[in-house]
Image (cartoon, rainbow, N blue to C red; front, side, top):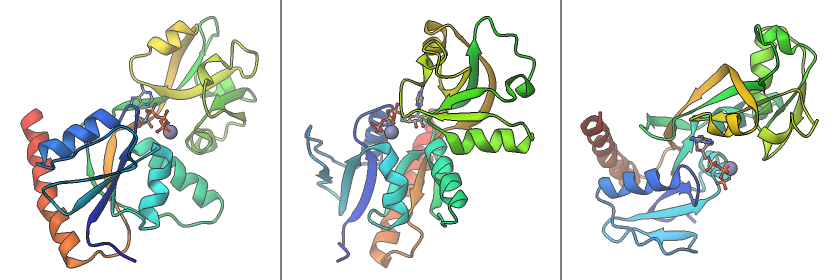
Length: 224
Ligand code: ATP
Ligand code: ZN
């Protein structure tokens, strides 16, 4: 059954949580986010906020379980690539790129490795949580490599002897440095985006979204 309240998914805890919450606040949403709650009701508008793992957000939006979501482009693009490789469609509407969540997906190699370009990694093992984006980068260059899929702790893989290089998210580079790695190639630049479910929403919900979008636009312009 479709609820009348607009449902928005955000990351429960992690790098996008604080900024997502601040964005809602700046749009005038009054939210009481009690720690362990999955759903928070907005007090002054017909909106519910769903707090989940970021990886769940593309699926929830695509299926229309929620109407909107805030998610990193890196996750969105990865899900799309993986689904495409399995012959499954993936469609969500990107409403707006947001001014937070900035990071890059980069290749990094041990400090003492002489890197002269992507071909330096031909035939090597590369650990990543983003096999889709990594695979596309090397496929476009016709360079063979071996993907080592790791859900976490990617940066320790070379030292542990699991991989020759890594492909991981970077913002400052401090984590790489701490693990004796150097960033050698940026393969994807990402920010958080606001996405909408592919199917048309009720007039009331769409009107609410049309009212929120200019507020987000205004907020971001003011911050520039
Ligand atoms: P969850 O528990 O929700 O699955 P997570 O560990 O997968 O969390 P985070 O590390 O919180 O995710 O990152 C969420 C998103 O924040 C990333 O997908 C990316 O879009 C963005 N991000 C911004 N800076 C960084 C960074 N330095 N490292 C990783 N992600 C970053
Ligand atoms: Zn995640």
